[in-house]
View (cartoon, rainbow, N blue to C red):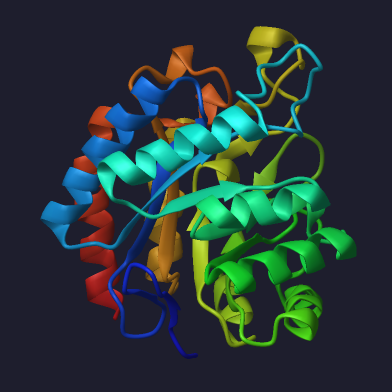
Length: 282
């Protein structure tokens, strides 16, 4: 498996490379919060010598309830992300949900993310692939909760059909296991790497309990944040090339997926541990 590169930032991801870190907020709440979280995570990863990409969503289009907070939207959200990129000098990761979002998102994001629920949407994958390749970025594709690891080859084939030079990274984020639950098959990480691409682990969303938040009587997604470090360490021990984590200064007050995200003050210790695991297995 060859490494792929975020060319604008000279960051390589994959075989023989340091642990790749995608971390930030689940959804943009304010520019000040994004800058604060991004600044702390940049300082932490710099001390550890780990390549870092700031992540936040401008819109959470797949919320359980129509009343749930979704984010500032495309225009204002991309403006916030561009400002984080300018002030902190960090690469940006964010997700898109619609075909016409591909070009504006790829103009700001270095890592364009296709959400797990949408990876079977051929037109969206094609639009994201074309726009990302044209902008010189990398496509980060979440494996759907209903897909086998080896089925991701079809996503890669679709993307490369229209963007043959596109750098692609796959992301494991758990598989539906009965109702309101996800499990992570660690053997799937190697299966996806055998498709010729690096693989990250989204340990945050892997601990979700879809539609099972007792605080809202099923009106939002629950989670088990205490499981995030366990899944992260296990996946990196299994060979994952990168880690995807979401933080918040006060997770219980986060406007989206609070039960699954970690307190920001836990980032330094966790990332140091994950670096150690990555070095040990490599």
